[in-house]
Length: 362
Ligand SMILES: *Cc1c(COP(=O)(O)O)cnc(C)c1O
Image (tube, rainbow, N blue to C red; front, side, top):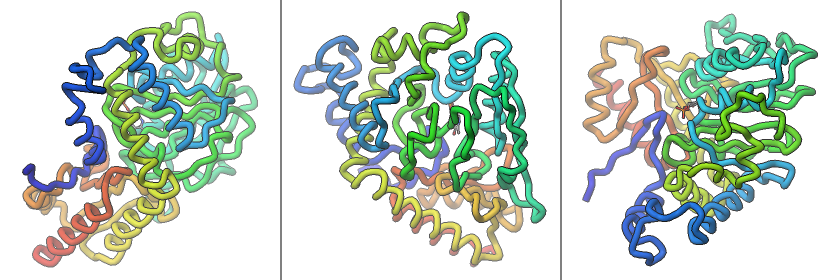
């Protein structure tokens, strides 16, 4: 028996237990072939069936229409920071980037290698000193922008949009840490992309959901493996895709369907976040520095009243089987990442621990 733990790591993050167990069962003898799924050709009919089923399940889960290609690519979220401008910006063309925290800032910085990237909105702290989103009316959107890029959920800062910006350009969203966590209307987006290791599967894989009219404009210097047209024409198999990660993503999609799909996990995600934030707000001992309406339901950063207790909190929480609660170095304090795979029980156990720790150290 492995010991019971809850893993709050921001990424690579925990995956659903039943998925890990199934993967373990199938590891050395998949489909009764006597080999692992990672040891067979990506062009074999058995593997192609896995790949196609994963795409179909993702399309069902998110309601992705035939107007979009679904690409399974290499290079994680950051690979897409480069792929998006390389695919959408010709020489001298511009794009608008909205900054709300560290990941959108990284996308902005990377984008500058490939085109003129405008700062449409900078990271924003409101009058109360809380991390927030610059009000939409104050964004500086350019008429010449080919697209508008933003990050609906900032994994490090714990800032999440509670709306989809209405812009008259293709909207590009880095959903690495919130994809499949709540229902969204895909048709509002030009491109949705996500590194897999938060809500989908193992790291390295990235999923790009690209509206078909945006495909085929890649700049000439774009590496073929990052060219959406090349990948779309080759069913994401221009080169050898990350086959095991793709297979595992497929198992996660199946698991999500068994849970009742995105609407059902969204309900649980809302309960989990409400339970944790309500406790933090009711406590004198803990605090969260994000404006209430923009609090992330996936990544909950929090501070202890006395920072000198951080090391003790981390040591004791780990002892209690609550792993990886250390906050990102740029924010400090703690962070609990509570993606789809985290059960409500994990958040309840965390809150009980936090309550107990506050009583003993308050
Ligand atoms: C984790 C993360 C990334 C980076 O993903 P990599 O796979 O490490 O490149 C990008 N954007 C967001 C929002 C993330 O959470």
